[in-house]
Image (cartoon, rainbow, N blue to C red; front, side):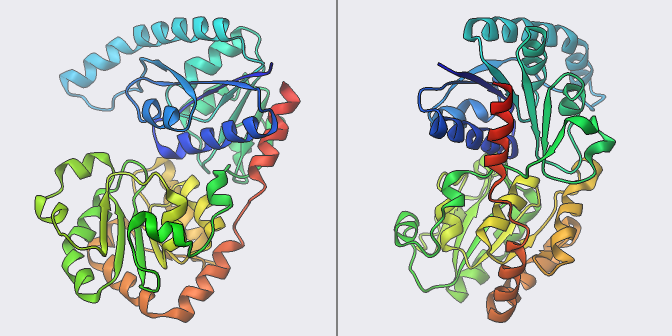
Amino acid sequence: MKRFMISGGGTGGHIFPAVAIANRIKREIPDADILFIGADDKMEMKRVPEAGYNIVGLTIYGISRSLSPRGILRNLKLPFVLMKSMRKAKKTIRDFNPDVAIGVGGFASGPALKAAAQLGIPTIIQEQNSYPGVTNKILSKTVKSICVAYEGLEKFFPAEKIVMTGNPVRDEILNMVDRDDEAYQFFGLEKGKKTVLVVGGSLGARTINECMAHHIADIQKLGIQLIWQTGESYYKTISQELLNLNDSNIKIVPFIRKMNYAYSVADVIVSRAGALAISELSIVGKPVILVPFPYAAEDHQTKNAKALADKGAARLIADSAAATELYPALMELIEDEASRAAMSESIKTFARPQAIDKIFEEIMKLG
């Protein structure tokens, strides 16, 4: 029996590619044994079991940039936390004995992939972004292969290890049925009405959320259907007035588990511009307004969004301008069928539906 260890997480941008990789492995090798290693206080501890896989949690976190007493204390403890996580990772890997270890970025993939390499297990990482995270930069020195989605990563990784694959997208999104009756039934929405999907990533987006909250009454007056993923933390603070709207056209949720259904019913999408979001949106082929997260490393979300906007494949609105510009742009796009059709065709040219096939090939070369 083949065994595969997959490590990483923290956000949906790491977790969903990891699950997509696991699903492809199981499809090609039904009796494969797959174990995830994640950070024990991050969302992978919930999302991975929901996808049907076992996960082991490590106590691990990154360097705190805060100069508060708590931030300083966390940094002082970090070397001991890392040593403890390495010990647990090594024990887990020895017990599981994988044929290949796969890292997708995030805190847990550091100790897990390092431990695997020290134990002589072939390792591979998948980098979703145009600007790699610290963990993958460090791991690139010891892994056998690096699957990437953007050109120019020779600046950060050994060139001879880089394989251009694109980002893996979940099967249910690759196989999405547009205007699916089941999708409308799932959300309790009406086919034929204009529908807006607002999603700020798995953790939410404050600027986008505040804009939608401010304009919810305007959206109601127009009779537009809205699916709004707030993120778990913002949902906890949302006003009861919003939660008690009692409007069948408005669906406010902390997290969308059937994202393929949400994409299916959407006429226009509002999204952050993370690498995985761009990969999914390109395959879905719906008109999109991108509001990049401005504090991403090297402002790579803005670069992602600009690449699409420059080709007419998306509208780009800066986070700082969202309060005044997002709603008018959304209404303009809802009313302009010709623009929606043109954007839809343009964004499809960025799609890489074979990414998961190429990544699977690279994994099998090692195991």
